[in-house]
Image 1 (cartoon, rainbow, N blue to C red):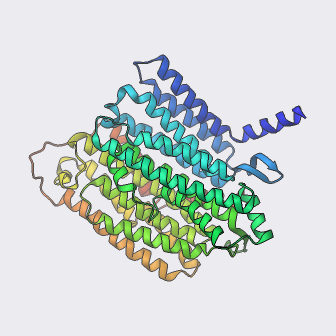
Image 2: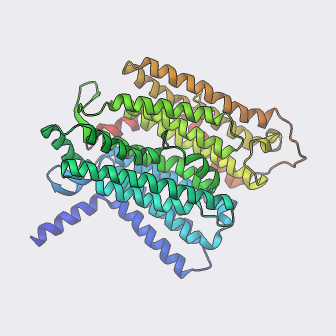
Image 3: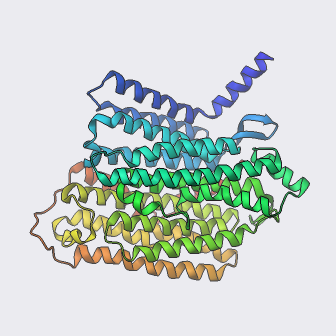
Length: 503
């Protein structure tokens, strides 16, 4: 019996090697920070090395489809599959880029004595996100969401010398605590109705006993509130502008990419595993007739993108503008889920890759400009085109891509979302999304007007850009331009990520 238990444990641990690599990295970061109390230079290198090892392990098991910590045949707490591995790899790469952001950021340099805590919290955050995208059990879902949330609350207020950092952290804690409590209440109701916390088992119980009614609908919506908070979906978006503006720029960028990716992966799993009845030959999902998720997601996505785009029109701070832009993009991504098909999930995967690159690029330019000017106000970008031409052109390309115009990668991301909508005969929704894209063009072009057409109100010298920053920007600009023309590898990656979905 002991041998069987040991073999079972070893087999499960082998399947979560990437998570173990991140956990080991977290321990190393804490130990090195304690041993080398004054010298923090090694910390980012240790973190990057740990993430590279984890990424290698993810690539190694990319095509694996299995359960870890199973409670019965084909019934486990953790799912290892290409879909989850894709999102984990996306988050690992995004974290490596954010570490490089942090090395260049004046805000993070100001807290040099607390960089050990900074990188340790970030590693704890990515560990939680890894488990979020692989969870098939409500208890594990809640624990992983809380691990991510608690680390992000502290990171949002990392710079204690800035009042707005403390304000962002406090607001994030309050809003996050409320959403977490609502989600936990929904989980407790669902457990009371079904007697199980495993999503697969809940699906079987729903089909067998026809569990439905108002109580079930309420519990499912309450659980969605916690996930909707993570992805900044309206009306659970209210924390996003204040937290994005008040947090250090690297953390703002991290929340806009990695945290949002984990939230979407979790939401997709929750909907498909819990409510799936069948998948037809065309890849369209037929969900249990309990909740009209299609209509629900259409309403939420339209509300999210419309609110995000129109609120962005009046913003005068670049971080707040990008925060509302991030909300709007969450609306576009929700449309891919509203289609309820494998084609829609493929569109989400493609969109996330290009969104991650162009959003990180935009935040990098904002950070480099803030390092020089000490400001993120759009009015202070007047005349930037002549003072920092490379930074200005780079930001222009990223903003054009965020709009979704060709020949940038942003166009490809939106193209596949629209194709999925047309295939599902959701033409009216596609038109609304297209009109929202036109609205977004206005506030992105407004930034470019300040950069290239407005004269600077102050006499300012040219802004120099370090060689490291130039290399970093070129590395982000290249895929934005290349994927806008040659996107076959991106599509192939998306297809392989859903080919063996382990649910």
